[in-house]
Image 1 (cartoon, rainbow, N blue to C red):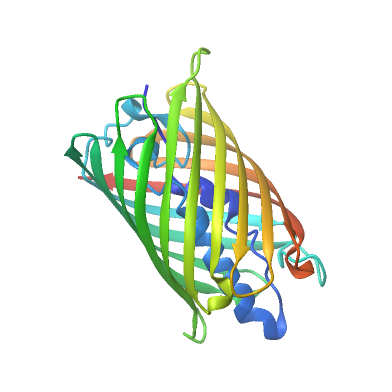
Image 2 (cartoon, helix red, strand yellow; image 1 turned 120 degrees about the vertical axis):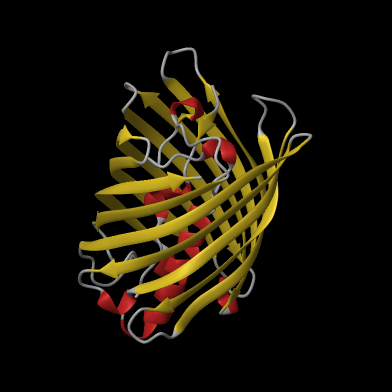
Amino acid sequence: MILRFHPLTTLLLLVLFSPLAQGQNNKTASTEAARLRQEVTAVNAVPSHFASDSGTIVPADDSSQSAKLFKVGFHQDLMWYSNATLIKNGAKKGDAVYLPAVDVSFYKTLGSGFAANAYLRHDTFLYQDNTALNMWGTFSRFSLDYTYKDKWPTLYVGSELYRYEALNSGQEITRAVNFITGFDHGISLPVQGLSMIYGYRFAQIHSAPNINNSTNHRGILGFSYEINSKWNTQITYIFENAEYSKVVREDTRNILAWGLNYKPYDWLSVRVTSSFADNDSNSALFEYQNISAGAGSSMSIAF
């Protein structure tokens, strides 16, 4: 059984753990949030073997869309966060965030184990209370993938580009060009319906403002259980280390997340998710914990 994993899964685990400050720190906070959103989404961003519209690990042969070259998706999630500012000090309060997104993916086998893999997404942050942090932007990714044999890990190398701006003022918050490489793999376990994914990703991030230039290492381990043909549940652990080159800062993140997914049709899925994030840093501002919970849906068309 080949496994698939959608980038929105990981995005929902991490998207709002970035440290969000207030007042004069709004731009810095939004920059961090946007940068981390791209890092998170870029984990295995639509490789052929980890790409499910439901945002979960699922058997590839359960989807009639798996052999198509292009896929267009429309996604929305409503999340609640126990620490909406995502900083250790300052006002700590819950907040709701609406996350609509539209994306396009392309995957084409090239022969001899190689494949071209491309992804483009436009997404938005809409906060209920912290409206000064509202923003939107576009993210793109291209990679060359290589799989030596069936059931072997897939290696990839590529690049990412993104740009985000404040929703109200239109002021640029951040932009970046990243170099990425890593591997990912999915396997079926002896228990019927139980699957596992694991992977590693290295990223060299070159951003503006350059205080976010960093070297990132990330590992992911996830387990999924297919309850039946329509229901799936999964638990995922992510570890990440980020070392910044322009400032004295190093972060270590641990995330544990759970999701329950229902896919009544090939083109429609709904989900509920929850997560716990712990971010340690040698900069006190960026030490925090956050509990999140929410629900979302995705619609897609493949051709």
